[in-house]
Image 1 (cartoon, rainbow, N blue to C red):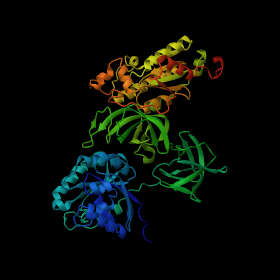
Image 2 (image 1 turned 135 degrees about the horizontal axis):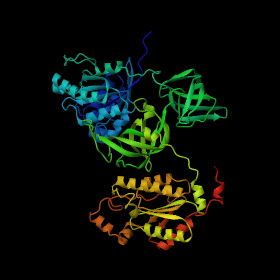
Image 3 (image 1 turned 180 degrees about the horizontal axis):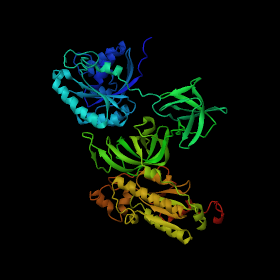
Image 4 (image 1 turned 90 degrees about the vertical axis):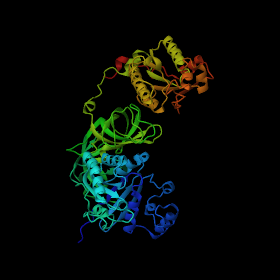
Length: 625
């Protein structure tokens, strides 16, 4: 009986622009007879129009499928191809080489078992080569192969090969890559790629294809405890409840004791359902539906674990990020974290450093820009079950999603929990917000006025504060300028500082509402995501967003502080409406048009909107104890 085929090998092919990645894949497909005749005919026709090999067939066009790629001769998206030999099946990701597409490289590395790092023999190791090697390691790739391509263009010079191998090996050793091999190849001719090259008698190692066919990247299924994130709760009828997911680590069998994280409840596996049948056990990589007995509360985003070896649960972490958004990372700005099948609100609380990809040095940084790699502290709005990424890709890898656009802002990996933060618990208080509100005979609320400078926020806020005070209400006014004299005096007007300014004010407003006050906040608060974050701190109905609306021309004409004139002369930077954006509220609770209504009329409209009365009469002394 022939030995079983090794498992499918997923590898990412990476390198700098024009190192020959697409040609490598095209040659592998062609020499492994994985190209249909009609596809080859199309490539031969396209070679005459787009190709770079003269009258020869340009095998790179088998992969460069986008029209822009063909016309520019570069790869700008991750192209996936599958092929097989009698010895193994492969899925290869052709990652783009240009620096501006580093985020695509991270996508390709996130599912790879091995990285093939391509280097042009004429150019040697470049900064982008180091960047790709570090990203591959960051996203869990632990084995790598250096393929020194275009050796035919340097006359198969042994010294050039050894110099490149030594330079790259220093990077690989520093970041802990294992199973490192170096192979001299010519993708154009296939020498040492799919067949032995007679031009390099000094090389006695395997071809790249032979190495890929035999490299061992499989982890023993039982080498780690059982973990399965729940992706879906399956209840087709009242007599069946199953929990669907992919086994991320370890193995599970019918009858095993399991725990549910983060709840901490325990049960046993009653059955393992696969398709239309059942089986006695499942191992890493299997897609299964588990039923439990006794039945316990389980929901999407929970993790089913070995009862004797639960996963950690925390709400603050240190993590590595690859920043993928055109807008720089701002400390304190709220994002959505997608960690395995769980989504939680999160914010970066500190940028510890940015990584210099060329040499691995850690550099001080206040922001991360597009394609930057850095180490940060993160805080989530509720505890999540996780594992450090070095232990589990599935439980330690995450993405950050922009709350306003739903775009992926970053990809990251958890290093470890911040234990001091994880040990901080909410202290139960005997006196609640409801008690304090009833003592003041009012409903505690936050009235958040947003709008551009000179739109009328402060005037309306002052009039509202006076009106409510005359009515006997207990209020406090937080004004943008006043707060910057104390609480936020250390902040400037960069985007990051504005985000932190609003975060601090929102937290203070939340505490004041908890004290039973009606809090009036008058801030430009130009970014939609920060206003959404502020709303998320309050119970439904306790946050009233008021858009104080006036055109840029009207605000500039009023200009009581002369700020617009200075900004237009370039004397003030990052001024909202001039060289920094104002994101208009999409669904405010109230819009006040200060070009059509006087401040007094706006206050009348606003007071009609507010629910200042208690939901129902209730003595504070009857509060549950």
